[in-house]
Image 1 (cartoon, rainbow, N blue to C red):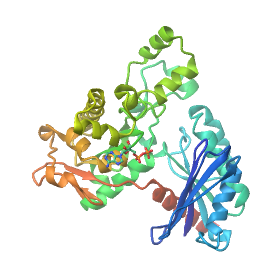
Image 2: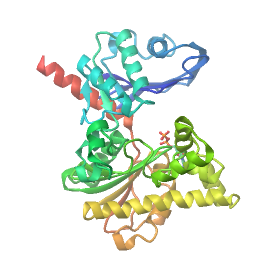
Image 3: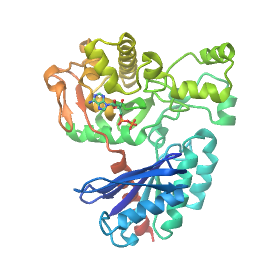
Length: 404
Ligand code: ADP
């Protein structure tokens, strides 16, 4: 099947057009600066050069029209007719408690997505716009939603409830949801295949370390705990988000600095984390360069905080799982940073984790970077959230065809 995977943000749309039988990305690209006169579409067809188009793209409907047009284009396209798009798979950030798996988008689902807007006011509205735009251009093509939160719906209530009046959970659904679910699910399944064991028999910790970062405890293929919470702010230190902190500190800062709600939100989401602590950058490569050449003291401190936080969670999740078969690193940092893996795994031998420093240096593809003697494996597994979305979409469409 050929599936168009869409990840719609407030001013950008990332897309991949995937052939699911051969697991090939036929074309991929993104539209940035939607809503501006200088919007940019970059498009790379399989095996060809990237092209860049600049022009006015006022909204998501027009942006998706351009995406379909470039897929059809005689020079840079990969299809001749838009009917060759068999289905569209949408990344949707927040499925709330309504969705514990991927779904075919129906009017009922659209209503539930709208009902969940309050839980993800920044993310769900552009996801909804993207679905509506895709429906308007491809009215007869099935559309599916794949949720970042769905995989974590298996958490037990003692892991997802916060210590606030239960009434607030009932009234506003305030609880831990967790995010990056497609990635945690994908790498946990890949880890099981790599180890040649059924995922049902495994205790895994998956660390998705990118600009946003989260870590999950996965028992028997089900998420039992994860570090992101009610929003993607909780847990690990991230590029621009601080992760775990005492909630009363924000009330204190708001009072001291006279911040309103929106300013406090910006402080927590955009100016905290690695960039806030280091004062240098949110980008791990820049931080590592500064750590290596010793040029920036606070970059080194931010790096230590980042790694220490992950190490603490690994310890906590080994306790939650009652043991560990493998710790999996993924995401831009988890896949590429030997320094982060080394710092996180240092002095963890007593918990069964022993890193092979040589193997850790330049792993290729899915790789085991633990020593032979390590009781638990340490894996580096590149994530592929778009492929998960495409495969889920294919499965749903096939099931739908059988039912009809
Ligand atoms: P996103 O969360 O936006 O999808 P990614 O998963 O692509 O982001 O991760 C981006 C992060 O990965 C950045 O902090 C980047 O610096 C880091 N990164 C990418 N390559 C390397 C590398 N070779 N060494 C260390 N960090 C890296």
